[in-house]
Image (cartoon, rainbow, N blue to C red; front, side, top):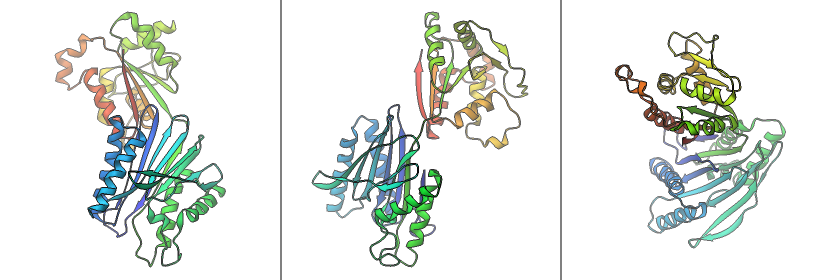
Length: 374
């Protein structure tokens, strides 16, 4: 959850926030390009993108941090744009690390209390940096921000600026009054802008990494490559946490056999556009396969208010829209029907093509997507 405002109305914000989820952790970076305007914006965006890419290619958190610090120290020596930043990593068990380079310290937000977190000084690449460690329980979070917050009011309403402690006291009052955690970054940003009225001011960014139990959706689509793996595939689906979905009539038969039950038509869904839906006791949603997946892909970017009817496609859309993590268990058995010319004539792509496209769209929407083939 992020709230931002530019130093000058209509100009690009010189700060950038980016994040990424993996199967084991969530990473957030709040980058503050020195100065303001387009140069600061580009520098901040490049810093945030580079941090995430270093982690994607296998750098550890501290190694990625050190690489960024080295670059920023060189930029300062060369008198080129550089970036102050906070790099946050939250593991799935709540263990949290915040590494800060010339950035304000983080604030721990608990259910009814907030406090500035203590920092430990660490020398990295000859630069003095700060490290913070804490543990987050569900319902708690870490707030990081640019110096547009900590220096708000400097030389005006607040002689020394708002500072981290002042922001923490403000957030503590919000927590005590029952303000929803999702509203806190916006309230901090608004207060910082208010304090900066009449001063030079700066770009303002506040970003909250919130720990909560994730919403999980697991989809089994397509029978496994060999019948010997039918039970394994069905077991993976049924033992997974969260909502369970089957896409495909043959796949539905696989799951029903595993459960010792039968597949029946869902009489409550009567759509003129989408394929039929089915019912298997113990499974949250059962739909047809290829056509449903293609229709889902076509509407993933649409406003649900525009949907005219309830169908297997729209129900699956709703599940995925509210998901944090999507597990896609994809069977590798070939379906000759999908290769029929009528499918190509209608523009219906086979499972092997449409599933990766759906996964990419979900990732673009900020979902953690894990694909497993069986």
